[in-house]
Length: 237
Image 1 (cartoon, rainbow, N blue to C red):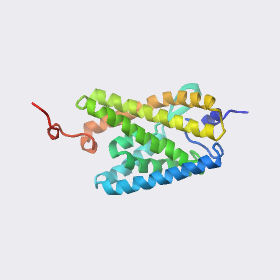
Image 2 (cartoon, helix red, strand yellow; image 1 turned 30 degrees about the vertical axis):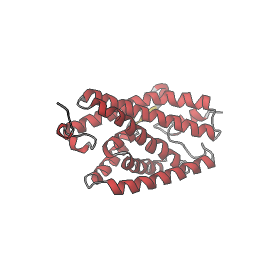
Image 3 (tube, helix red, strand yellow; image 1 turned 180 degrees about the vertical axis):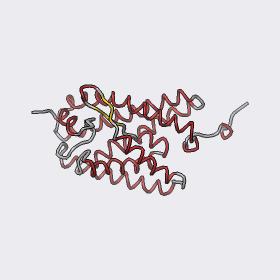
Image 4 (cartoon, one colour; image 1 turned 135 degrees about the vertical axis):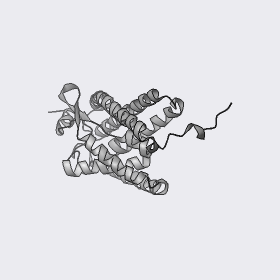
């Protein structure tokens, strides 16, 4: 019988194995994914409504459209499989993690319903893995490095690429754990396969994220809420 890892890679044409189809996780695990998604999304909506400024509202729509389009473009990875951008790190860097989670929930949910990229029962897990974790981890990684690299554009974009790569790997690990807990595949089988494939996919994610952010830095630096004019910092001497 085909292993769960092989099957997951072959289920969809884009084949990254991150979109969990229905039947690949147990009912309790799928239900827990829905509970976690709804709970986190409720917090994200509340925080975003409180903190969002008017400029960010259309940006959320543009970001959702960009990520949706970017996810439709696949790039080849090892073993005849292909991957696509997730976009959570980029959305979080531009919008903040909470607004990014809303954007990613819309993108992942729409693709699940319209293109069957992942099952409806597993939608909570897919949103959690590909949308919420990537946004949170990507944002945290970027914000950790950003103060140390301010003023060095090359180093900053390199850190963005690494942050995006880390977010993909964390999502792959999370997916592996969910499949293992469900009894679909032993952890020592699914984890190396998922982490290995997504290490390559993460390279593409990092390059696209850095390129997109570099373009925005050049053309619309005002869209980057983390960046501050040098005059706003309190220097000494």
